[in-house]
Image (tube, helix red, strand yellow):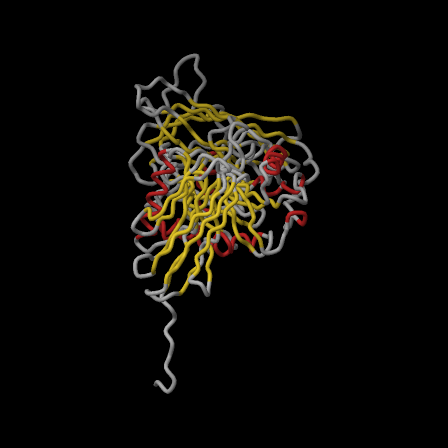
Length: 533
């Protein structure tokens, strides 16, 4: 429907779209309308074979080819409080473009105390398409951290992927994260710059080894949830590497929100004494799940909620097929969209410890312990989730037993739960169980009959002012105060008749200093008698 033309005001075209749910009518306008915009949207739908017919399309813009210079088009619109998660602004890009720049803004009206105000995310897909899971089309994401980005063949704003600016229909994606009762007025300025392309970007991923820290089969210290300027972090990649080395870590995993851009440049900052693994914090509206141990350049889609269980399963499968692991991150975080709402049986790890130990961590630990008591064990992991210099990299950290300091070995150790968590590299720990003949370590199983005593031994150092606890499925069974030296060895003997598993904690005034995954007691394997049939 065309807006009425008022004297002295330039004529504008106004559109209304129904969302995929059919509930919300979004109204927008495109200033300086160009011929072919309606055909653009239709052409984009047909090119995708109707696959994006249910997508929420916003007013699009088309640019004519020109010899040089630049051209800017502007789209404005309004999201009501009842709105879907993702909207797509089509941009028709002609031949001869060497750079795209997008700047966006939205209003932030005052809201009553306790009411969410406006926040909106942004990213972009190229002409290869923006269907769910279309990694070829993905060209970048910055969430709500930046108000602008550029992409060219030679480079891109962190979070975005450098590469050719191909002719076709691109889509700026807007994600209304929270919307005030008054709604959200938005503005998007798209600038195309014309001219010859620059030198092509050359990816340089991190090396696959760090020989100076590889000790063969050993315990390796790592932090598997970290951010840089490639998403919403304040550290540069170089600064993150320096912080990880200072923390005494053997490996880190880069987990930027919803983008793979960092994985293409870690080789510029790698050292021979720190292994850098790739990942992505898949940041949905139903929670965050870091996918860790991914190949360089792999991107995992995030445009679904917990109710879309088939979509979640699909991308978990992609992670597993690539050799990675799925982490249920900060399960009880209190910000909208931060708590983990997906199925736990699909997660490989539960992040029970994220940054400082708070009520959120206590809730995560209790939930994880409840799963363990019910017979569903998902190994625990602890990460710093460091975003800025005020967050200490490696606090907490996960110490994993692996055959080598390589991606596959580390993932195998984490998946098996051969790991413990610590507040820093100053903490050292060992935890074993023995029946006098055989022994088992963290994440392992000791087969023993019900009448054989089993002694659990915890040795820990670097934890003055703490108390150690040994817990089984009933609760705390043994505790000791750690002397001022910070070192103690605690022992407790039990029987499989009463105890199914034991785990250890080291606490300081209610907070955690270290904790382990459990050691399990299992029934002996059944022996077949000679001559039996």
